[in-house]
Structures are given as C-alpha cells and as structure tokens.
Image (cartoon, rainbow, N blue to C red; front, side, top):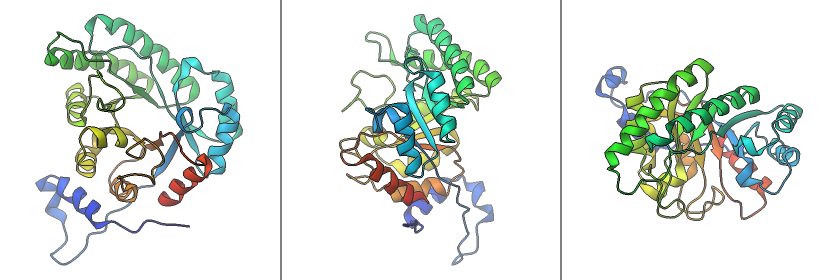
Length: 290
C-alpha cells in the first residue's frame, strides 16, 4: 500500500503561515520539530463520482473502495429514508449535503434563504449530517460589490444562531467563474475568509474547493494553511477538466500532506467526474492518505 512521505515544502508553508509568537517553541537551529499528523478523512460526492448508480449501489462502491463517508447535493431531491437505510446498511457517515440554493447577496431573498436553511438543518439532523454547504448566489448587476458583501455577512449573522442551536456547521463555497460558474459572486477564498471572520461564529466556515481555487487564484498550500481554522470542509478534483485527482497539474500528495500536518480534522470530499473506472480512482486516493 502506498504511504505518504512527508513533503518538506508543504511543511515549510505551514511553518511560514504561523504567527511570530507561534515560533517561540521552535527547536534550536539544525533540529527538527515533529509536527503531529491528523487523520485524513475522505468523503465521496456520489452525485458527481457515481451519478448513474442507485444510492445502494453507489454506497457499496464507496465502501468497497475503503472509504466510510459520502456526501451529495440536494437533500430535497433524495429519498431521505432510503439514504438513511443505505447509510446504516454499509455503516457509513454522511459528511455533507447542501442547503437550499437561495441568494445571500440579495437582501430581498434573505427570508427565503433562512427558511430554506431551517428546513436544511432539520434534514441534516435527521440524516446525522453535521455540515451544510451553501452557495451564495450570483453577482447582482448594478449593485455595488460592497453592498453585496455586507448582505452576505448580515445574512450569515442571522443564520448563525440557528446553526449554533442545532450543532450544524454551514460552509460557504467560493467557485470559479472562468470555467464553471460565470456570474457567481464569491470567487476568491480571501473574500470568503474575510466574510466568515466578520460573522465570528464557529458554525459558519468555508468549504475550500481545491479545484475551484486553483482555477481562480492558485497559491493553494499557502492559502489553505494560513486559513485552516476557517475551513470546515474541502472538495477535491483534478485540474484541468475536474476529473480524477491523479490527472492534471495539481500535486495532491503535497496538498494533502500540508492538510495532514495542520489542525484540520474534517472531511475531504472527492467531487469530480471520473474518466476511468470510478472504483479504481477512489482506491487510489484512499491509498494516498492511508
């Protein structure tokens, strides 16, 4: 079985992202300070990786690949009881699903957003799912960007008490506009981190989609490790093409190693469209992180 060899540039990026006070306990020059590695937890987005399979068959493929968690998009389009039965049959966890797709940048839509969130929280609790993924809506032409930014913060501040009471984390999702989502509002991770910092709730964080942020901004390991405390979920796919993680310009072993030696303890969701045997691709990633 393939195992990670520590990747020194990733460790240096994590080291450099720490504040000056964090270096007080650094070892003497010439010595190496051991960084404890966290367990890497994988989840498979069955709507992307296995879209043509019934739920039971999709979970069987995921489980046989050695992965114990899955996620999906719209819970309201699923048979929730069937999901629960299949999850329990294969002894798996539901890592994440989406909340209703309502704009957060438009104050006029806020009541609908919060109503959809309340329904999604209830569904998440029923599914024993602790993470909800939220898109934020498209950019509103003719409205100053700062006004839309402030609407996002205000809406999430209203959402925070609902999430805190339920013990559910909402993660907002930056997406790329160059390839997949032209017209979307939230593109860069720095703005997403600024928003959740302003909201100031542990239950409002960011889903860092490695594929989308490679398209939008690059500089991935630095951006991840510098903001790891605000990341509640990851998505991963190869670039270009959004296919298997082993295809394209992204060196996932290095990215995963940087996450491994951080404080992150959540899931990495595999959200890609396979070009080859899905089971083989899932096993390959499982072997990387085992």
